[in-house]
Length: 254
Length: 249
Ligand code: HEM
Ligand code: SF4
Ligand code: FES
Image (cartoon, rainbow over all chains, first blue to last red; front, side, top):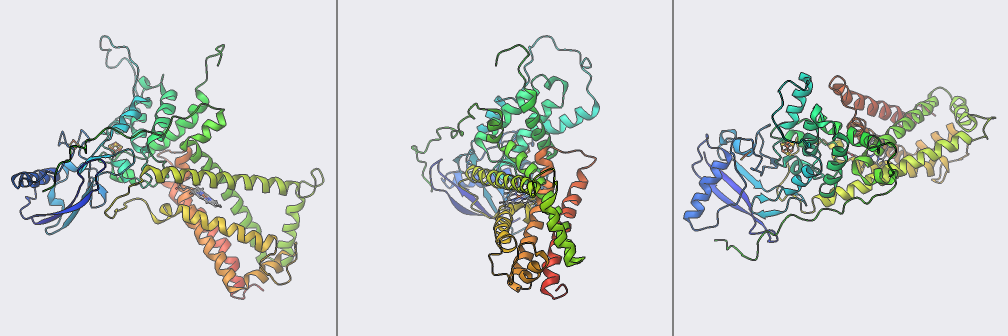
């Protein structure tokens, strides 16, 4: 396959970036998108040029590192697919492909296509956990969980924290990520004790970094794990409920 | 070959906005974006209720002149004599004004928040998959509606737009004399198309904002928003359309 790539190059966080065009004369259709960039990078290194910086790790769609905007869609045109799982056979011979980093105030560009997504970790720290004293493993069926709840929690837990939802959102909102990370705990019995402090903690932290959701639904279509915006409704409802549920214990002074 | 600039080292994530300060419950609620969206949805429902009732009342113009004039008179006297005349009308007006102000205030504040979430936008064209025209133009249709509300009050409440023989209370003639002016009729029609787009997204989106979500009823939400938007648009547009075409005189 012959392809023309237009890739965003930026030397550092404050440098002025630019698009650079690369001709790819012999792309194998079975390559993944990242493997194609590997081939390009090997060529750049051989030419003693600076290779393109991009994040990647697992290359099997589970780590959430491989962030890039491909022809205006996070992770490219294939639904439910992370960039590392996107194969070049999905593109047409002779096609022009434009690649850009995620753009959001809280995802500053480190270099080229690599951005810093650590603000998502700040949201997790604000409530995306359960406090469980460790000890011997408990019996697997000791806590009964309805199948439906387990399934829904599992769907939410599929989030790999890639940030495509933020990248896709015209408002730069992180509502889908936060809703997924909120729901997979709050749908299960183990997540109940901290449910209401979790809702307030995660939403308040999210709003310090990201935009506000106007229900475009763009995140859901970009998400490589196809997380549903139904979880956003759950997060919204629980945040409002939490305003009333976080009562102080009787007899305690404010 | 591009040079690596060692001064160009990455120094760490940006700073977040300051944490919310503690305050009274309602202030805290308002300070959160999720809270503001909840208020937008609640005030949106109030406004939909108003626009719908307003439309039903106006459709009386097709029954007879005395019918709509009598309805306008009734609005002034609901609850009378236990309440002062126009008492209920003023309560409704205050509620509406409050709802509109909260709705617009929240919209403006959230818009500012969203702009600052991506100060440096994409440099290549975006390909939107789900965000439809109605959703992407909420701020514009909202502004059109707001300007229209001001014009509409000047026109038919205060008679400041040069309506022939304007007389407060003479509702039928005021409407006919206003809408037979072609540019005015077009303005009313455009404004109602804007409301229809606003509600196509709004009457769907409010369920998400309120957290009303159940797999059993989710497929109905889009139908509901299409229904609300088209009933309001068709009902309201029929009046200027039939007046300007001379069917209603
Ligand atoms: C007066 C000027 C108005 C402005 C500036 C305005 C602006 C907006 C904006 C910016 C949104 C948020 C859009 C989003 O989150 O996607 C919104 C939502 C909404 N608006 Fe308005 N609007 C106005 C009037 C109205 C009126 C008259 C109605 C009812 C007939 C209405 C009903 C709604 C509803 C139901 C929502 C959805 C709330 C939600 O998503 O939770 N709006 N409006
Ligand atoms: S919700 Fe989807 S798009 Fe967002 S971070 Fe998680 S996996 Fe990525
Ligand atoms: S590299 Fe891990 S998800 Fe793509």
